[in-house]
Length: 122
Image (cartoon, one colour):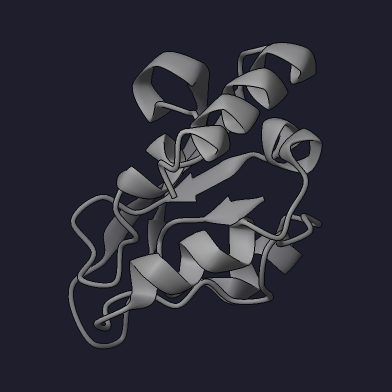
């Protein structure tokens, strides 16, 4: 799973998911997006193609969708929203987290990832 919320590393484990790239994709800091891109640059396109996505729109720690674009993906086009829930945030108001599953075949998504990497979208 790729956590774009930027602050919910425990949620992946509660969902019995495996975080790819790094154990916790930290957001909200200068360089967070670049760190996430570099970490996922070490992951195979096949693993990226199979990864589900966790988002939290509007969160100050949110990793921008640009991360998926750098991997050849588009959240609205290539993923289906399968669940939502309220995230209790002790610093700010509760926000909605969203879980997305990949729609493309592993081959199609892997090819798109490889093409994005080859043209330097990282």
